[in-house]
Every structure is written in C-alpha cells, then in structure tokens.
Image (cartoon, rainbow, N blue to C red; front, side):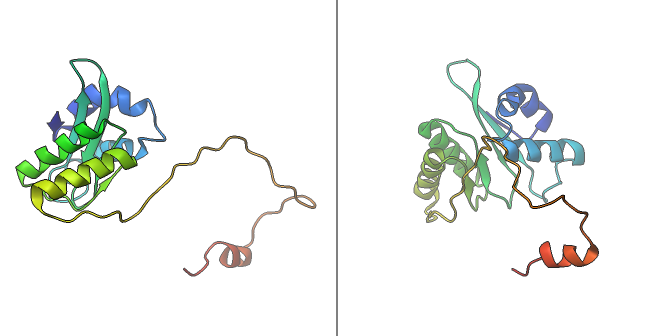
Length: 159
C-alpha cells in the first residue's frame, strides 16, 4: 500500500517501523519530520509512504520516498521490492536512487531499470554496527575540560 498521508502510515505501519528503531532510523526520522513540519518539509514533491502486508497479516516491511532523496526500504521480500519499483515507475514518479538492505535494494533497482530503461548501479554500501560493550578507555590521570584552543585542534579537522 502507498499513501502520501503520514498519519495513516504511522497508524498502520508505525508499530512495525518502531519495532527496530536502529534499522529503521531513516524511516522514523523522515516520518516524524513530515508529521511535525508538513508535507513540504523535504521539497515540493509530495512524500510517499508505503507498507507491505502479506495475505492480510501484519505489516512486515515499509518504505518512504521524499524526492529528491532516495527511496528508503526496510528488509522485505525481493518480489515486494520489485513490485514497489514497478508501481512507482507506473506513476511516472522520479526516483534517483534506492537505499536499503542489499537484496531488496538490488531487486528494486533491477525492476526500475527494466521498467524505465534508466541504468542502475551500486553507488554506496553502508553498514550498521551494534555496540556490544562499552569499555572506557585507559587514560593516565583524570580527564579535564576542553579549552577553546583544544576544540579547534581536536574537533574540526579539514576534510
């Protein structure tokens, strides 16, 4: 299902999206920004929210698209990602990129290329790391407050 209505999206898919806040941080952040700031928060093109329900069961996947930003996907069956790409291509909606787990993102990109003729390529791969245990660093002596001089020498390295 697809909808431009963030309230409807959160009512239907919110529990699923909130169930894995680290994995779904982009979807949660975008939905909250639009809920608070309105549909023009990310630009002139209306945002689009989606959720996947198999055989009338619970929501098991979600997506969000706020052009000009990529379509953001959660984990989902590859055929569902391909069907989403086909649906979006059929609407004439401009999609510059897709982000999500490798399988669904590749399935989306392949179907998008098939439907639109636009070539697809991997532009960036990302990982999400989980902190297992926080171990304080060993330091000789007590810590001290930073000074303005230390801030400029330790915080702002040229890139």
